[in-house]
Image: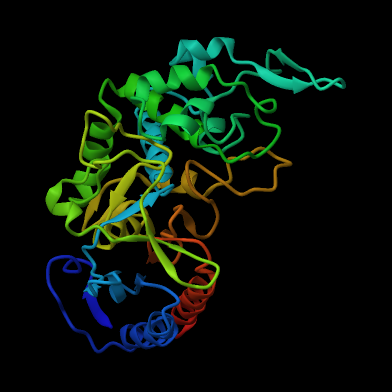
Length: 380
């Protein structure tokens, strides 16, 4: 078990052991909750980061690779998958705040190919009719999963998530029929978020990945957050596993991405789930959210953007509480396909991060972590 409790300012630069009751409680409850799952072989390894009262506590449990017994660390690299969606939402809000777009603008204003989008409607005889939507999809709907778009396009299902550049991918998406009229139903959609990434490219005049790097990652010092991990970063990549029915682990890869992961000629930035990052990078981001847009005394996002991120953007009558690329409410954040999850509570200044690389049933370990985190946050 590896544990470090750090001040926010020094959290990612030095090890500062603290004796504060809250910090010790975080260490004890997380260790007690997670160590049995590693010892019993239920999970290979995981990282927990909890933030409360200005302190950051890391717990790194288990291994990046079971066979090599390589300890998991706070700079281990993870595929964060759908956590990528959060940064697309933030990017759109940054441009909206600058007056370069409105979240209620029709998508076709920036991506003209969406002028001809159609809804696929099944007839009584089983045939399909394509008809114009009752209302045109707007940017907000793309980011809160009420645009009517399906999860991915048939082309992406064949070639992978990252095989088509951002702007050409938008043209492919525009040719994909909607499953219902915009604004009528929540339907989780990678390609709605990918459409947001294309809008960022068009409006900003920058490549999508460059925009995120310049506007979010560099200001936060997120040096390992990238669509294309280099060789040094890949040396810290956590091995991915799939849990079999008997509880054993089978090594796997990120099957929806192309390899080598560092190859920019065959892989492209994908807004719905293409990013890699580390615990020490992601906690910088979550601390910023929890501090209402400020990190280490520097404002990265306005309080207005934080308020919008926490506010339900799905239409009235739709139950799902989702905002711009993330869940809304008291805690704002998102999870990823291989088990990563992060959230921030800006009303209390708290943040929490769980990182693992595992397909399959890891639910009991995650449930134990949730309970440990709740115990930590509720303690006086």
